[in-house]
Image (tube, rainbow, N blue to C red):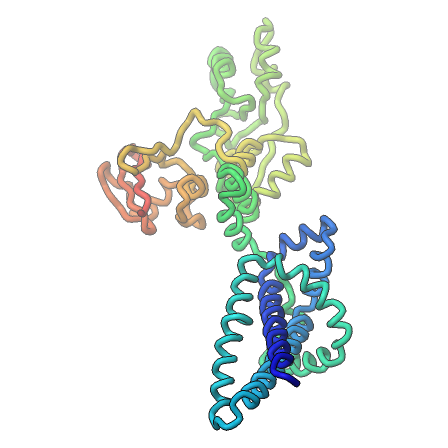
Length: 413
């Protein structure tokens, strides 16, 4: 062959080598979830690519088979050209090998792979149309090569079929949502995070604690009860005798307000209007409680411990707030200060504080910031006390006899 033909063949081999190297990177760099979306949209190239990636071992075997053949053939052609040009030079083959290595590294390896990693779909979809028939033609060779590859992998304890999956776990999905700031507003990110956290949250994490439950004590006078009904901020209230542990039922204020002006209105009228009380164990998962509210068509339940004692109260609004955040914004539990710190109501739950402040305080033990501080200090700290809690600096601003009320929270820089 003439030198012109040989150089043409060498150039063609370099182009083919660049194609195989780039297509390998592009196919392996594809976003699998975007690919599935395009498959649902009936994109022809995406469908071909998706079918090839179902067996990545076969695809890689085909690409590497072709790429190695092209590279070896290019080396042979370069050797022939070198001998033709400088037959008398003893070191010409080594020189030609060095030059070809540099040219292939730049033109047929790094450049196409870099481009493919930046724009994988640009090369992956056209390449799928080429690899599909090639895989059928060279299938016996690819199958034979993969047979030994799979045997070698099994020797080291890897089963190709069992490890062929790309499913995301919950933490990986959270990372994807956290990194999607440019695709969705922050409030939607928080909602999705709340949904993902439903599985790990229990009603104990979100309930209104026992000491904050507002209810109607039938031991009070009828005048006091009527006054409480008229000015209650809630639409449903528990009704009990002396103690919340002696719960009788729940009353809907819309129902009772229609009767309150009647002359014969008394405590018995209230009792006759009560709905049957509902109880939930404190370990009930939030998503289970939500399903129970829907199934039983109720909106409120008392939370009890293993001994049956009332520990708190949970409502449908509490469950929704776990997903969408605070529904009522009048009571602000976290207030930003001009110095970069935050004033935090110590009754805030750890889960809500983690969500609002983007911090990572432990949620396994105490459920409120007040409880976490007291457990850490093993006492109720005095006003002005500063502590470092799990890497976060806190200062006690306000307290009463048995709890911390207000904390200055300084997030790490």
